[in-house]
Length: 135
Image: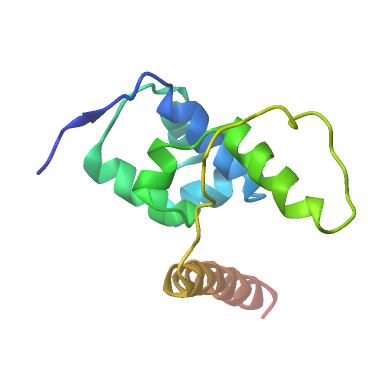
């Protein structure tokens, strides 16, 4: 078991929380994908370090790469969002002066499909439970 601690000078839990919010997920949603409680997700989001195995699980559940999670930077997201929308006629001035050379984190379709299948399986289980309660 690889237990290398991840701490690149920034709080990994806060990155997880921000990505979770950007994905529109609640702590319960992330907990369901990880097989843990909402309280355990809260504890993860308060951690400034994380071992590689847990980091891999969290990144997968969030639909991002481990590298993308480690290097997540809100300024880069804003910068890339601004650049994306420049050709769409949408103007934002808050981040025009950021001159970082960051690239967007692209998500392979197989990761998207895997996340969708997990969410779909969860919804099917809940549907079956509700069906049994009524029946």
